[in-house]
Length: 117
Image (cartoon, rainbow, N blue to C red; front, side, top):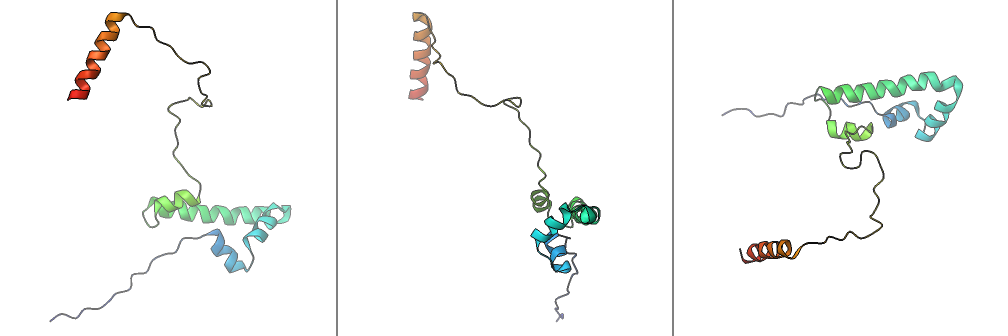
């Protein structure tokens, strides 16, 4: 008979802005207010960058969930493959197509064959 036991596996918790605010005993709103003040902006920028670096590096090495980190850091791989960056607009005038009678017969016969199958 074998002895079974649970072995705790230590895991590292990612650094977060919320976690820093709890450690510093300030609200996130106070963090943002202090960050906007010139005398605190440098140090709080370093804090924010250390948090982001920890999250990103942890995601890259598989220690943290990369999907969650991407959302938290507002990272996305978005590509516009349809409009080339331009706004989508609707057609202002209807499009009309004129077919000769023979082309219309061919199209109708294709439609009938497709429906029957």
